[in-house]
Image (tube, rainbow, N blue to C red; front, side, top):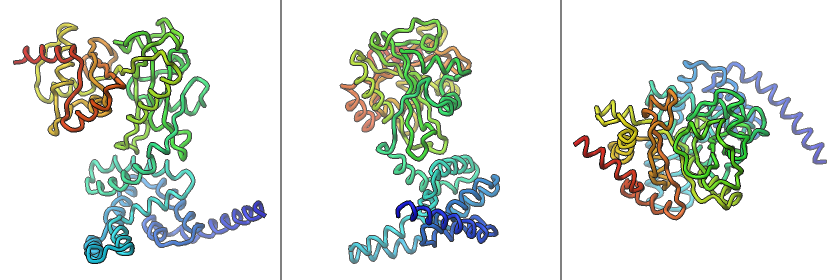
Length: 415
């Protein structure tokens, strides 16, 4: 009976969808959106949602701009209704008045997104929609209210509890490996052979977060080198001439590349959870690991020096290290947080600035960003909470005595 019921349901849905598509073919995407918000039937809602997503995929930038303008101007909140329902709740705080206030204070476009998300595969398509929104917002800042609603929904839909951590290795599906090559944002992967060198050897690991509705799309991934001692240059980490060690011989896990994969999920943070989960998994797998550290770029150093007209010595390796240390500890934004985006990420996670290295990344990109300098952020499991709390409350940067001394030496030279 169950099979027969499912079969009849499928046949009915296909017939309904075919007839519905004929009915909707002449309606605009805005009209279809209003119809979806007003629909009460599950099958009709699914059909409308699919039709809207398909129609959106066919739009050019002008059409997408018009659609986002519709979301901004027509599907926001009614301020007067919000005030009225709030007064009613204040006068009589009941379940009914609270429900009315919640309904009034939520933009209709949030409900539209939820209904669109009924369609299988819609989550990824909505992520792509936000990618378009972020791009078009550069010339249409009024769309920012729509982005706030997207961020609110995505923060729930991509909650850590829904994410799945999967190891990436040479046996992973080719489609996923291709995406690792495409999405690598820190150290370019130029060929399949280079990718093989990062995921196949015993002293290498790669992990990625996936969402159940986007099983073939990594959200963020991290590449890890298992080493004896702390790595001081990415050339050494990536060299195919290095001596490959067994995983059991390693005492250090070096996180040398963390790449966000989905532009449409910008601002939805996964990195903190990713690092903590990988540390926990590696600790269980390899009890001999006692140091968890990054080998990170310093992407804002040269830009900061140029924008602030800051002249720092960089003639020798030691002076380059002073320069990098000074920047990491002293260069601040208006809100008191570090100028460097990578520093903000790791310090906010509770890491400390452990060491800086000159000539650590001599690639074209590394030289353009920081003159080749790189930094180790140490994740000391006994200090992470303390470091995080001090950084969150007072923007205090945890740093080793060596890095602190280098920054002070550079400060004296600039005085």
